[in-house]
Image 1 (spheres, rainbow, N blue to C red):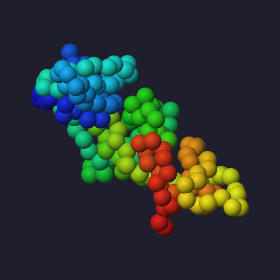
Image 2 (image 1 turned 120 degrees about the vertical axis):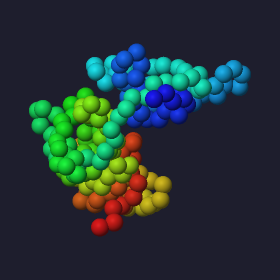
Image 3 (image 1 turned 180 degrees about the horizontal axis):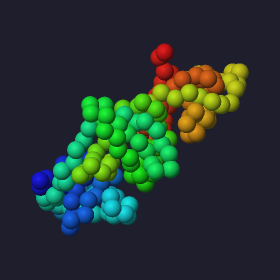
Image 4 (image 1 turned 90 degrees about the vertical axis):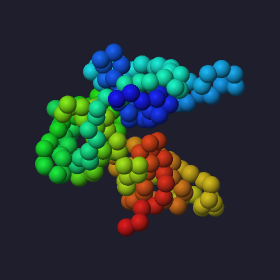
Length: 188
């Protein structure tokens, strides 16, 4: 199915010269003079090579047929990351290269959107926010104001983030999966 290049978003899968690519980022550029273009940063699914392409916003690109479904994350091992379709209990295994940086946010039983092409996982879309626990952080310094001040903290998944000064170790917080930033204290 052909679509306009300007309609492609992060996670879209396109077919260029018989090879599948997943869009990592799409940016529409409108120069003051000249034709608007769409800058696509993509990763070839077969071997993981990253490429960058520019298309006129009105150009047509072949979009691959991809099955997007909600899967439940089960576990990871030497073979890869295992997901289960909650409707029919079919399991698929995604490679570590395909999961990429998203691996640190995966939790047992987490529902994710998994894109498959001919039964092979090709793209993973995490929930926008996840709840994690602070394992260690600096103690509160007396006299420091609560608003506007941030301090480094280590999360239970191994990531570091900046949190407000009143947050202590053992507190559950909501984190954005897009960039790993603090959103709010989790409501239990």
